[in-house]
Picture 1: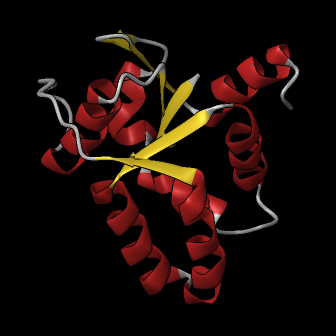
Picture 2: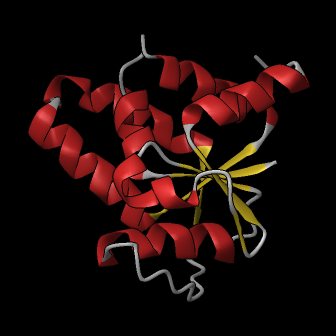
Amino acid sequence: MRVFADANVLFSAADPASATRILLEALFSHATVVINEHVWEEARRNIELKRPSLAKHFEALKPGFQFITAQTIVEDSQLPDKDQPVLNGAVASGCSHLWTGDKRHFGHLYGKIVQGTRIVPATALADELIRKGWL
């Protein structure tokens, strides 16, 4: 299983007591979690602005990710430009899943497969990990 994580996932996982962190750590143990520099920097900026006390916990996550530079072009006219690198990175890196909590922008894709990548919220991903016995 290869899971591409969106910036909102990283932001939430910076809190060591969050359910997102628990889910991410399960993935680190059993799967490959992929991000690109775009995702990392967006999450880092938001941590610095909104929750600077969690910066060290956020930085501690970095070694668990596989950073990719690959991009492909997946046109989705409903996605804002800032979200295109997320979908493009997930597809280009051959991820089985794109994990995002951004229902506003990605909600129309939840549960759908885009060029081999299923777009999922945390609940759907957690259900799958429970079925696998990883959570």
